[in-house]
Image 1 (cartoon, rainbow, N blue to C red):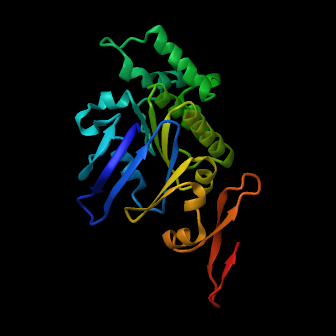
Image 2 (image 1 turned 120 degrees about the vertical axis):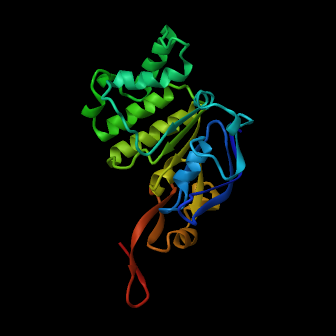
Image 3 (image 1 turned 90 degrees about the horizontal axis):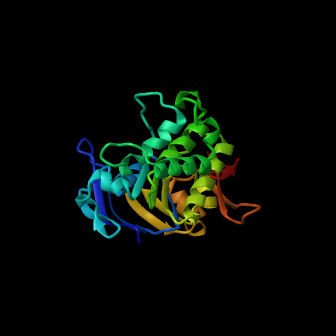
Length: 268
């Protein structure tokens, strides 16, 4: 296992809400989908797993080393993290944004070497962003921007990739393409964990799911185990209908109308 979380907990001083305890492992070649309703603790868990937040209790181990003993730079050499929002103080060109991912590997003077440039070129190609390498980040669409940010994280050459709701606000085509890129990275041997509210994309692309509710893990396993009617009714408090995908025979989740006055529930 590349990453291990052992009975980690987390909390916020201003509220009584609490995460955990949560335990899970992430191995090479996996695409783990972290799912659950709003307020379930998905982003908090990912931040703890990535070393952005310290757990209240428990331990995170990266390559069998306690994460708390590693510097941020050392962590970044092995783990790439893409948050929900990426604030940019400057409007860089696409190629410059991707090159920023090489920072953790540069020598003291910070100059790019031929190998660094080769990695940047490879990441631009893998994310299909080379065509607009000279455009400013502000000139890109949402889908293009997310692929550039993914390229920048991939330029770190991490063994583990963690993303927090990376397809929020993207149209269906870009959502599918982005998850396809994540699946490709897993096939290349990366360990990938992604927080998402899209249960259908998670069911189609992820090799394993982790379902959270009110800060606790209510299930881990494959999509056919977790995207199940009774379980989702309990976690999402109704309003969902589980069917099978007509082409891939995977569970898919549809919204349902609120319960009717006669106590029955009509599907949309």
